[in-house]
Image 1 (cartoon, rainbow over the protein chains, first blue to last red):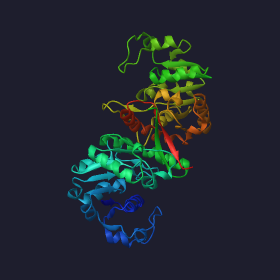
Image 2 (spheres, one colour):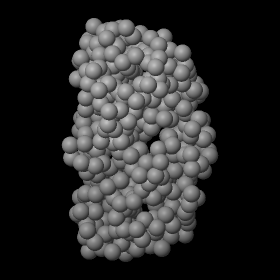
Image 3 (cartoon, rainbow over the protein chains, first blue to last red):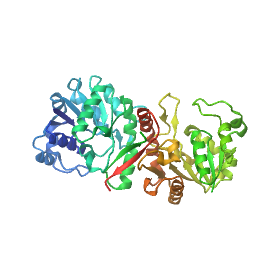
Image 4 (cartoon, rainbow over the protein chains, first blue to last red):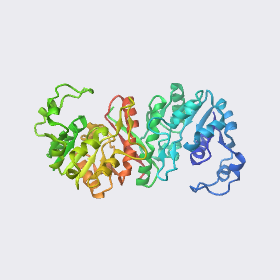
Amino acid sequence: MQYAVIGTGVVGRTLAAGLAALGHEVTVGTRDVRQTLERTEPDGYGTPPYSQWSTDHPGIRLRTFAEAAHGAEVVVNASAGAASLAALTAAGADNLAGKLLIDVANPLDFSRGMPPTLNPVNTDSLGEQIQRAFPAARVVKTLNTMNTAVMVDPRRVPGPHNVFVCGDDETARKEAAGLLADLGWPSDWVIDLGDLTAARGLEQILPLWLRIWGTLGHADFNFLVQRAR
Amino acid sequence: MQYAVIGTGVVGRTLAAGLAALGHEVTVGTRDVRQTLERTEPDGYGTPPYSQWSTDHPGIRLRTFAEAAHGAEVVVNASAGAASLAALTAAGADNLAGKLLIDVANPLDFSRGMPPTLNPVNTDSLGEQIQRAFPAARVVKTLNTMNTAVMVDPRRVPGPHNVFVCGDDETARKEAAGLLADLGWPSDWVIDLGDLTAARGLEQILPLWLRIWGTLGHADFNFLVQRAR
């Protein structure tokens, strides 16, 4: 399968590497290829420059957002939430039309300092904003409720735990569940929440996630919905 | 221990009965005792009238908010989130001063229809609003992330699962953890998230909780934080 991963940060890299390891053809999309490759210093979060990571992953191409999306069957939005609509606009509505668009981003707003708040929140979600902006794409929100290392390696958290999917297109949700199965998620760990308005709840779990992260001191955790039946 | 439970709905009744069953003296607080007792019809949600429930729980007194809080060592806010500040104001700041104030309410806003949204949200929480309004109370937010039946009977959900506590007063958090232990929560199921700003995340889990409830078709579930260490 041909995947485009939108975003060159840790989330994009980890998902790109995870998908490539499964034998998929993966192209990472960025705003400006030359600029991305020319950076030689870690970013503000200490993330090594993309070029360094790229050397270790020679099979993964780097292209513009539009080139990456154009050649892809499935597009994964792994950009920072505040930049997602701009990045997908640059990718081009025509290059997204009809395609499964996996949205793993969270609309974190750092403008008020730490911890980040959410924008949008409560009556809207980034997932819904993306679907409205690209009505011909088949948006599925999933994987946003956990650390990126867990997304591609669920067994690093012991015991069962859950990943949620939601989206307006039921077939797209099933395709997303298939991708999750490829990544190592047993089918009974996947909870299908139905239409995309559930993205509000999935994104609003982030403030609690961040707080648990701070309390535990590490991100190797995830939520399990314990249930009577 | 003398408990006041603020709120005569299902949450208040369930907590009152649970605390009374442990041998505590429990007084339920209401705005107007006579009016509460005079209702003979189920409310809009099908909840039986208080008087009917009261007949089955003769040891639990019903008093005004102020009377209930005045005689209590611990006050439990189990009122509807939108009514909590008014109910606690009626209870009286003097009657809350110095006391552990357990806040289990969620600021659900039904004014835009179903599902409810949250108000406040994102940059504030009901727990923090209550603490600001009653600075001499020792507010602990806990138990708001689950169905009320699970609050007082955690074993009705199989396997381990978590309850969170947060509050600005560390001693108050420890006292709340003691109450949770009384209610059947093993100490290693309790996650202390620190100060009261964590109430934002705890309240923002509600939209996902509601969606999971709709998906499962029952409320006998709760979140477990699976973790590597």
